[in-house]
Length: 51
Length: 254
Image 1 (cartoon, rainbow over the protein chains, first blue to last red):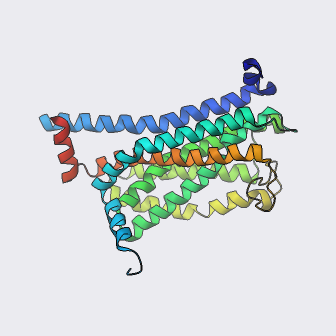
Image 2: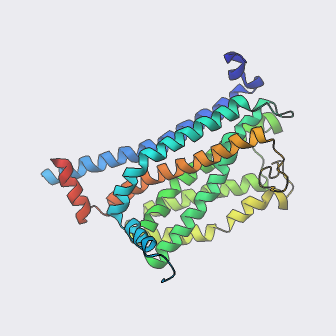
Image 3: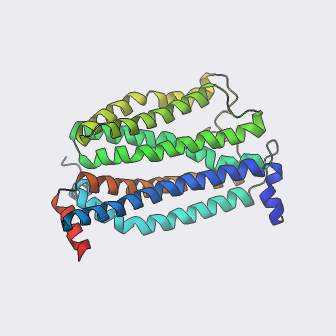
C-alpha cells in the first residue's frame, strides 16, 4: 500500500481524516487548557502575594 | 467497616484528602501518559493500517475507531459525573464534587466528537449528515445535559451550592442514559444496532475488534489524564485559602 493510497482511504479520505483531525484538536485542547489555567493560577497568586 | 482491610480505608482517606490527591496524581501522570500513548499507537496502527476495509462500507468504516469509543465514553463519563455528584451530595466529600464537575467538559467533548464523527460517517453511508432519530437525538440531549451542568456550575458563585445543584441536575439526567443505549433496539432507526456488545456472537471480525477495544481503553486512559488535569486546577481554586496551597505557593516563590 502506497502512502497516497493510505491517505485516500478508498475515496473516503475527507470524512476519515476530518474525523481524526477534529478528535485530535478537541482532545489536545482538553489537556492543554487546564495546564494553562494552572500556570495562570500560580502566576496570579504569586503576584497577589507580592503586593 | 471491620470487613474492609485497614490498608484500603487508609488509602481511601488519603485519596480523599486534596493535598494527597494533588501530589499522588502528579506522581502517576507520566505512567498514565506512557500507557495512553502505547495503547493509542497500537490501536491506530491496527485500525487504520492492519485491519482490512469493510466489505460494504469500504474505508469509511475506519471512523468507528474514534466514533464508538467516544460514544461509550460519553455515557461512561456521565455516569461517573452523576455517581461522584451523588457521593458529594450525600457525604459532602470535596474531592467527589471536584471529580464530578471536572468530568463535565471532558464528557461534553466526547459527546461532541461522537456526534460530529457520526455525522461525517453518516454522510457517505446514509447520504445525510443528520436524522432526527432516537439514537442521534438522545445523544444530542446528552450534550445539552453536559452543557447545562457546566453552565449551571459557572452561574453559581458559591461552589458548595453550585456542586449540589449540578449533582441534582446530573442525577435527573441519568434517565437519558438507558434511552441512548437501547434506542437502536426500541426504535427503528438508520443507526446500526450494537456490533460489539452482542457477547454471544459479535458481528465484527477480530482484526477490526482488537483495535476498537484498544482505542476504547486508550480513551479511558485519556479521560483519567484529562480529568486529573482539570481536577487539580479546580482543587487549587477551591482550596486557595487553605494551608497546603499556601505552602505550595511559598515553595514556588523561592
